[in-house]
Image (cartoon, rainbow, N blue to C red; front, side, top):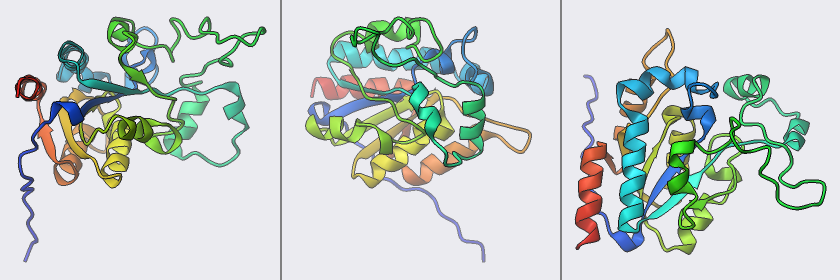
Length: 238
């Protein structure tokens, strides 16, 4: 007899003071056609679901309503080339293309230096800078592979008293899902925004369909951008 399971999560209720929008990888590498290399691997899913437009709608809504926004970027410094442990198939590929590479964070005067950052593949996607660099959004330290293990996302959420997360990002079945799994283990209640996430697909299968199947089993909720924004607005006036 085949085992059948239908996800039956109770409806997740947002609580604005304890809710954050958590986004990953809002950088040229993932979102800019002329610059991004990773973009080429997720381009079809980004276009099919208007992912870039939906991400902006979420950011705009969160900014206007005063929700916490936590951004987990992804980049590497030259010193990271000292690693000598095999990083896995995708990690090996990303290293070979110079994925999200940056110079040292300071210049010769030991001052913080963003000159090498501006406009490069690791830089924040230009249309999103008005949200990411507004003085309210928390841009965390970079995750160095896929998950929150190597940065301060969990710390930033805990220190704000956040318990509930709305999550979205272009690398849906890699970095975003890895973040989701970590944050579930850390005890957060999570709603994944299904049309604000891309996915790598190949000739062996549809990566987007695969990640949706996983998210239905793991997340507390799976919403569209339209549903998410409606819930954010309702919680903001509750």
